[in-house]
Image 1 (cartoon, rainbow, N blue to C red):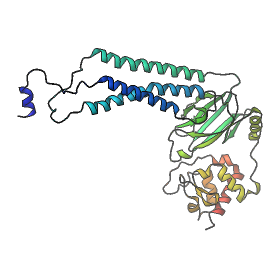
Image 2: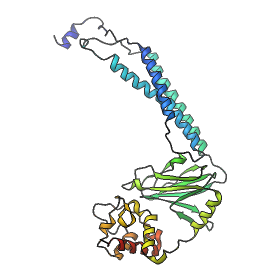
Image 3: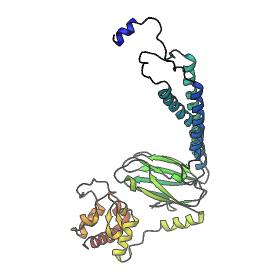
Image 4: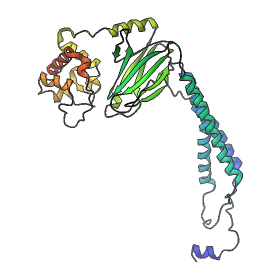
Length: 355
């Protein structure tokens, strides 16, 4: 007699498995203990780098609250699944037995709907309050325009003559509110300084803002937190938090026009190569770089003259090396100036002919 025949022949309620009513108190106890251990572990782990902004503390507290709220939910679901697999699994000879019916348990359905809803509304409300508080405008705010492109950040400060001061390194005075205006030249980027905790996307065509107040002296890494292309991992910069006096002095120096490369030759070209991020994408033995995002310059420039290299710096789209895409920033000619381009081209021409 097959299963269907046996089912049709069966009259009255099907017998239940003898262990179907396993002790739910045991499951609840395991869940509570596991939740306590999970919360303790989550709070003991040092998830973030050193906190260097006023906004870091409330955001770290928000993270702790999320751990306290979410660990019991995760543990609860996991314990029920594991407990069910162990306690309620079908054993040999029980193929035709059934478990206790729970369909139509209104109290249970109300509980598992109401608790997550209350929890979610509470967390969203708390997060909204924290975000509103850290985004609140403050007096004496300094504005910095941040422009992202594949694969570099450029920072623009308002100058005294109305012209912006562009730098490749972010300098900020301590304890002064900063308003960042994020822009993107090409694709979606994400401006993130982990020590400040705040991050937002830089979206092409939009101005996106956020505020921080650095409160700890030091140097902190800046990264792009959005996969923006082959060189995404190299899109890094540095934020330097200094005293107000040191920042003012640095900004005055940054406002001066760049000095022409001394001698226009090898050493200054090498300095330009490393200080402008070229070593982050290209392999060049003389500079000690072995990056593979862009072409290996020791190979692709070995038979190229200085004029070709200069053109490649000013117009990198003119000729693309085999196997690579057109991702190099197009403004290196503007950044370096005519003397800088000449110095870099001469340096690259000299060091790639050594073999």
